[in-house]
Image (cartoon, rainbow, N blue to C red; front, side):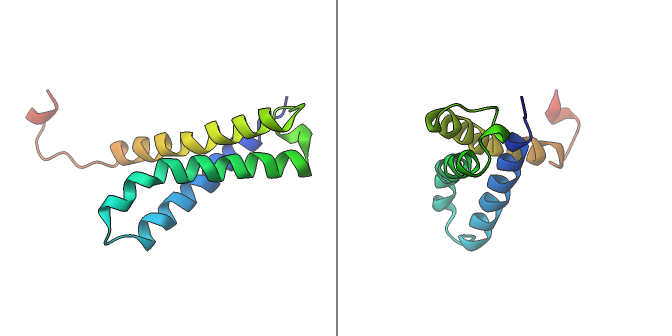
Amino acid sequence: MNFTCVPIIVVCCYIIGEIYKILFKKKQEAYKLIPILVAVIGGILGVLIYFTAPKMILNADNVWFALGVGIVSGASSTGANQIIKQIFKKSSTSDEQI
């Protein structure tokens, strides 16, 4: 099986989510749409990869499987964002962590 499509979709969706945040910087309430946006974009990328190179997306045998892989990969970019945010989070005191 070829797993290269999954990180490609995650990175693309992460970048699109960051661009969305830059475009709607003054509208914080628009940020709650980011997980939906990246899941939809991931699904579109999954289907696009399926039609261009079906063996690249986990040897998908139908478009629905490719769509599911794309949606899950796109949605996981939200989790990647949270991991990066927590790694670089500044703590004010060490007492708050206990």
